[in-house]
Amino acid sequence: MGQRSTHAAPDAHGAEAQPPGPCAHDIHWAGEMRSAIGFASLLLTALFAVDAGSGRLDVTRGLLWAGLACLLFAILLPHRVSVRPGLLSAQGMLTTHTVRTDSLVSVRWSDGVAQRMILRDLHGSQVEIDPTVLARNPAMWHLFDADSRSSIGQGSLRRGTTALRQLAQRIDRETAQTVFQVSGLH
Image (cartoon, rainbow, N blue to C red):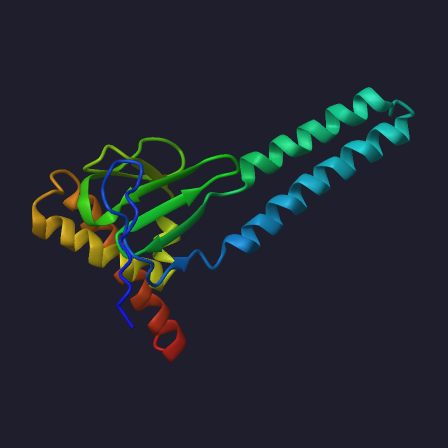
């Protein structure tokens, strides 16, 4: 019998895709999705109850309140982040953004109320994620950290080593606090 060889299919940028490897997902995403559903349902129920109690509930107002609840759900639903060797993906309701973590060019913090980390790779792909997703998922952090170190070693990461160092220090600090709490040394 002959040997069968499979080649990785090229991705959207012409680079060869990584073969499937261990994939780490945000273990808290399902709970956050349930919370988003709960808050949207609570808002819808409250609006329906107030309108029904005042005798003003009709089809138009019901559709308006349902649309408002759907909008709240869309705002509260976080992106589903996953990391595998060489790739980080953030899947929203309608789009998925993927960045090559083994060829990062820049890592930076965004300005704004919610802290966001923006990753950009050699191919121009960009992903914006909440850094707490990496901080609270050790498997994701381990894969991401290994690939970001690879980017630093290759010299492709030109901007963002400080941002990565800050994130690593934050994760180390939170891990140490957890260890102290579990061991009773807190």
